[in-house]
Length: 233
Image (cartoon, rainbow, N blue to C red; front, side):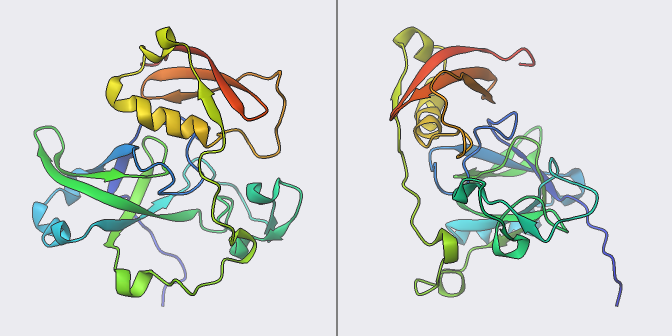
């Protein structure tokens, strides 16, 4: 048996996130986020997707390509615990792993044929930044993949969902494409700041849908300070 395996991306995702900051911490938290799975030319045969239309959700198996490091650590500091406790890497979903692999369950919103990219998948609720390489796609099987009796360890508590009230001047909100506003509002309401940061005087920012969004948080209120076109857009 070979001790090493070479894998090639079969696809890349097209999402609204230019960087890691702002990306939801898990898939499915912001269902209004839409992304496209664009296959590499060698894998654009529509026959490879035959039968997938019967499934409502799929697993994306992808690479933490922005977190590749030399070597590895047996323990990490999960953000969910505020970065104050160390746990075994295999007890977490940290991107800093011996093999930087991740998986996300997403809603399959459609299978579409395009002139530029051939057949693509439209998905909702993905937690991947733009350009992330995807190694495989598998159908989500409710009878096998859903385990209501499963224990969640230190992450057993259901995420709080939207925790912040979002305040944004109308003139700034108008700069966001109408079909992206609900997704952006939900991303902001989930509090995209690192869990260990709580400085009301600090301004944060991230790229979203070709825009640079800057905001601050005081108490339970997030205030949008600026929305401008990204310099790279």
